Image (cartoon, rainbow, N blue to C red; front, top):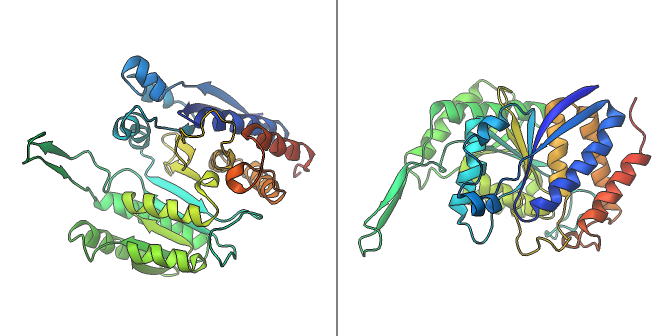
Length: 355
């Protein structure tokens, strides 16, 4: 039997509910498909910060390094500043393990109520650069607390960083529709965005079968709302990809169903899988958190591990569950987190396992 070591970090808020739900689904799926998941729990996050002054222990990254993959719930709490919680846990994991691809698919699951009047299905994936760009640590503040106070934040775009994320997007497009939309803001950001455009154009020449279209990010956001079906692979920097993937997820029915993979394509390090929703402290503990984004992220994890048949089966069962209306209130249903999990596990038990 194939075995995988999985690091589980429920984190904060509803992550404490959605990660156990995803684990239960994965464990129900694993045996019939001939593999086993060995779980290691890491109780890190804002509660850990309140006890220790750190989001994770000093050797936290070393502990995670031996895992085959990481399943993360959510990070953040009202009593801990966001720049402390994110830069104390999530961002160090992404950067230490060179998870330079943030892969964020967005497509409506059958039966999902969409916010657009035109509710025809679409299938978009945002390929977001995940380790540099606008989210750098370079900068600072001076004259704090005086009328002359100012802050400087530097964006960092390297040729290596832009080239490798662009290459990933073009190779993905070759397996899909053959179209890449590159998000830029070179009409307003005079150095980094023209550099981004130039490197993306260079990579495009190595993929003549892929059609590249460059969009200013604000126009791209508007066009996504007007007609998301015109897009397939969207290539974006760290900040622009973060924003656009929230938009595509909302267009697909809500961020509660949206999955994400933080991927090291070289597989030298573990990749990390998480829903893109936050810790949602307003509903934490109510039993109403939507577990689908977490479970869909877990399906992406299985695909990354090579368990493609199990991943496809789980995704199909998610579609059937939503279509049947076995969902939480944010999707128009009346079930709790655990009841949605029960419905998914029950369908897995009765669905035929591919030979």
